[in-house]
Image 1 (spheres, rainbow over the protein chains, first blue to last red):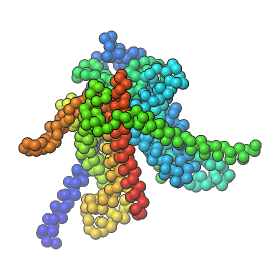
Image 2 (image 1 turned 180 degrees about the horizontal axis):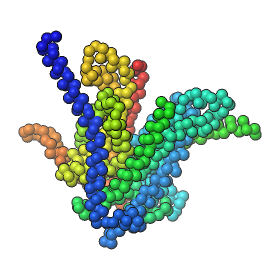
Image 3 (image 1 turned 120 degrees about the vertical axis):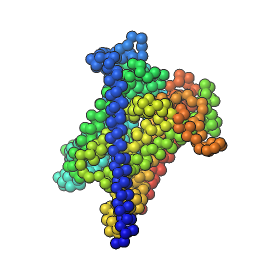
Image 4 (image 1 turned 30 degrees about the vertical axis):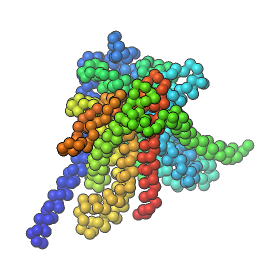
Length: 302
Length: 298
């Protein structure tokens, strides 16, 4: 081998190393993002708890940081989040699961290729559009049925949020059912089972951890959803489970404060980080459980 | 009725129930589109696209909003796409199975599920305050690019994974290095899948509202960011990066929150524009996926 050829090879090797290093740094970037999120949230939250006791934060039943007489009980915000999420789940879980069973076990290939993109479009609609729809279409519609329903309420955005989550539940559940080996189905059919029996007694139990993962991911999406609630649920933090009155969720509160001109360093400014970290923790736990379930499911069948 | 007949009947009933249930989503989508068209079509026109927002609903337009959206999308893409693709290439082609790779993978899965408003808080604390970038175009796009990066990474990985190892082996056999193989064989072959992911990520970014509100994008903007092309030397200006901005979804939110009914029509008209953009992007993504899935048989 000549000297120049050797040089060239050496150069090539260094180049390969440099590229690998750059790629590695890009992959590592996601870790920095998480560290950044946690650092920012922790820093401001720490400042917040210098002024407000953590006991008050967790047990006080009033949330009025923007009033003259300030209370910092996060419960009303979380009850708002819990209530709207529960409504969304009541809508999304049955519809999503039935759709998934239908698409996986009943629908012909042609119908499936037609319906799946439609469901995907539901997930692509910007949430601010759903907010408009909840406030100006669904709420007036529901008021025709329930006269006691307030203009801002938990029910209407909850239902709309449920529709938004349907594609998450249905497509992930369907993927899970799709991965169940054909042999299990054939065994049941050979014993004379109908499609429904195969679906409910063989496929759904076999795909259960995958389906559960889709449910939890749906819940996590609902907990973190912001614009639908900021537009249609109101801005009154209230410790209630009544779906007919205005409530405020954790996310809608952050929007409310962000819209006002809150100076840095004030207690109002710090509250959004304190409630933000609570939100982050809740969704983090849900995402991890869902991730773990999906992984376990994959290990069983793939 | 015997049990067998009953079971058969039940099976048929579920077939119909399943079909109707699956149509619920379609029905809601139709209702939404018709509602928005009925409310907003009358307001849509050339003037609506070329006017700034106004106190009078009939004269209000979305000029500052759509220009802001274009700015933000361009920058978000510039920031998110290269890093996202590079991260995916590392994870798919280079990484060894160890705790660090595992951690990165779990971390990306989690980031994909973090509520978008949390990215807004990150942007507010990090870009707006700590780095002093203020409520600018660059702060907004930085936050959005971090938000959509997991989508780019996950879809790129999926596209890379679908390329059979025989392609790589053939390239190695001809003496190509690892990077040459990736650069000239694997990535070009995976391009349709990567493009689909990029378009979906950008379509997500177009509709994002909450993180930008948290960062402090203004809701009433009657000016445009400084144009990147100027008539004076050096003809290129980066001033626009540091200007305040608004985007389409924020403009919509602003109009929906007004008490005057006239602004609802403006909101609906702006929604028509936003939905058109979103649907075109998603349609494009589905089309690319469909077209190339058919063409290539490994």
